[in-house]
Image (tube, one colour):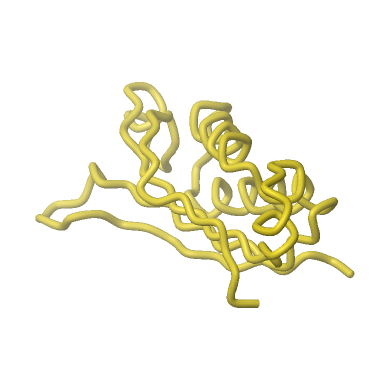
Length: 124
């Protein structure tokens, strides 16, 4: 599928990380999402009910990042992907790509960010 709904560089604060200080103080997180589905029905009908409404996708990402602490950003990405696939099953979502980045990662050197990218397919 080449059609996709994309949300890029969403920013939220969360309390996630392996180090206790990361869970105590919190830090910024950045999230990208790509949702693969046939956009023709929405494009032809101009009906938001026939697509992956990005307002809902944004809220799912926000609630996961602002939610309970996790040690790994892998766990955050996995939860976001699972929730997105479940939310958009009725519009025929085929796949979700989720990227989670930590721009303020606690390492003893300079870097822009650390992150993960996962790709999950809908169950048939």
